[in-house]
Image (cartoon, rainbow, N blue to C red; front, side, top):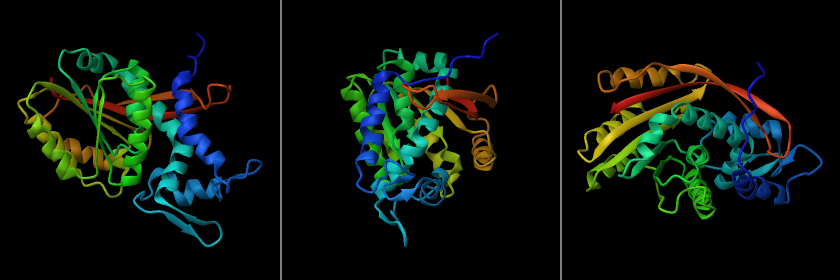
Length: 289
């Protein structure tokens, strides 16, 4: 039996990614078209020292005695340039695996809220749009880095403008866990909700209690009729400890069929045959079925 074809973006999503990530890097005067320099920094230095393989503090910029200064926004742009496609397809793979459960939420007469924890530049929101073709969602992005929230808003608004997200979609952003916990108290009508946690538990600064309080705020709302939690991360132990602590603290509050390890293969560019692959772990927790 032949191996499955690699995943690839739709042309509309590829165009959005090019316009908001690739083009700004190429247009930067410090980028060397014929060499490894992007925004004045070598690729390896960006990966290992600037974005620290995705685990840097994006609330601040970066300075190097040889390569100069980067603002927080430029640092986020380089994160997108290097990591976004991989994270997009990992989130897409998780959503595709749990598509029946998510579809039942999105097809319901009541609105669906997507609470994207550690949302970064809105990668998972874009992956959901790709998986379900113009879904109408009320998106709530949480990230402590305001530069990430700004990028998430601009990319998701562009997705809405291009009809990748449904026209009734609403975008909200916050950098505060305590603020997020107040959202359900303002709901006045029935709604479904799901939390997304792609790479969230890899964060050094994450306090697991914050995640627990946010989930319980939504579970305790009489207006939230269904509540799911989707976890995904690369197949490493970097996030395992905090995620297991979260499940231990939430014991008895959810149902699950257990954690699954999977793999994806994807095209780096739609116009190229070059592919990459990754292994990842995922789990669906049902807090309010």
